[in-house]
Image 1 (cartoon, rainbow, N blue to C red):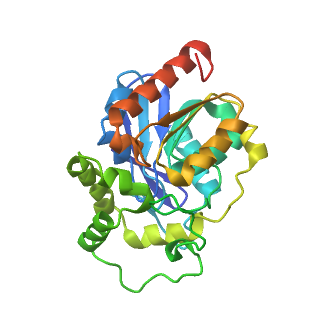
Image 2: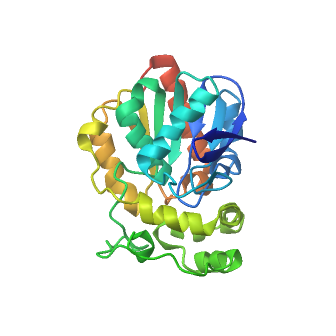
Length: 290
């Protein structure tokens, strides 16, 4: 457990294992524990140095002042800052969901620094088309994602947020909520909610999700081996992942049958297998596929 300073951001990270470095981030409302509490960090750390960070506005990372940097370019620059801080030249980059949007943008312009890129349950636009838990497209953006929506004066308690989320899991959590081991999975997600500063998350949501352009030309410039992985029932990112698989030159596209958006929580063993097999393939062949 450690912190480093990048401008006005005090960024939390964990650093375990030895070997080629893997820097990871995470999705909205999550933190580094998305990988550690599911056992994936420990599994990767048997062969790799795993450096897991909390993104701006999330977990234990704190940004002071009015200029928060809650945009994809600033958050992507945190990868370089962390690697420079640790004296790392090149690294594998592991991401999930919102963090994957950042990682995809990083790969478009900085892939010369990447040994590989792992994009799980994500897309390259930062304002994806939204769906409900039935897979039906929403014609109106939910107000919490609209920068014109003012922040509420009072924030609900963590207990109230947890109760609401369990009762209304929505498109991102419905497969986890319906899983026969959901009683084991929910505490991992609830931990994210306990560690976050909700007002910062809400400010992040109103700032980050602004660009519907998937940047196809940028995807074609990703020069490193890339893993594109998602759950079969990840409705929001199913088409965006297909687009990335069509445009990124050297990629492996994996769809995890029966899973939703939270692949590392829903099936950590399968997720770990796919990550390790991809990394081993990159190590031995320099390519995404055997």
